[in-house]
Image 1 (cartoon, rainbow, N blue to C red):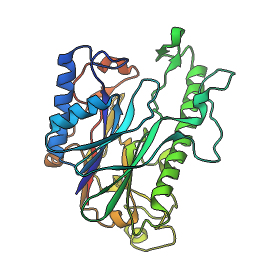
Image 2: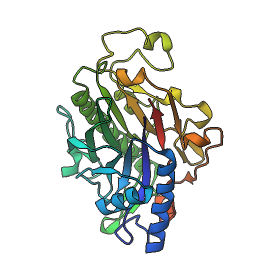
Image 3: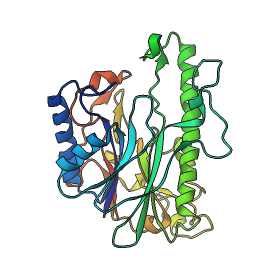
Length: 326
């Protein structure tokens, strides 16, 4: 069984808002390009990010061929994009939330002095589903954490991508980090809800666009108890009291030359992650980015700069799928 995650980069109906294709032709080219990858990947379940409408996700599922079941979070960000799931087997929603985990206070999001109602919410909803794969229940949580890409308030509610000065850049970098840390903590709470302290017996996967690299503090929050990683075989195969609660990032199982999912300012980074409970981590057959059939080819992605609007109307995605086969 192959399970993966993929940021689809603005899957939206034409002329439906910021980032949407301008014409039907651009939309159809976008859907076809994405569908061709999903068809070749052939996942049992794929977590997706940056979907605006249920109709757009349905169009993608139809273009990918075969029977698909879909789910989409109710909670979109200010641009209207959400996380969702494509699955070959029926889905049941376990949790769909956008409220910070218990105990977290609101975070500062900008230079404003008045509280913002969004200061205690995640950028986008986190969606947890379960499905019967024929080998028992598989539970999957899909997320899209706050981006490292910074935007700054401008007139009439619009955004700009250049700061007025370096002090503003530093402040908004801190605001983004505050939010991503709170969101990682909230996603970890969703993972705890699915694991229920039984990760050695349950098939649980947490995946999505985490918007930071493997060793980033925010990504590490998701792992739970420290001390056991897939690139440390002695620690992994020596059971301890943390195993029922711990999640393992599949990154070390991805060939090093393909261990990236996005290119930003010319720098290749793995910011999309798949994390497995102990029962699944013991059963990893292979992992990768892009398509399995092209594992020996170089993975080529466009380099993204500070203004994402330059890619509007472009087919495909600026991310590569990240996947694991168990």
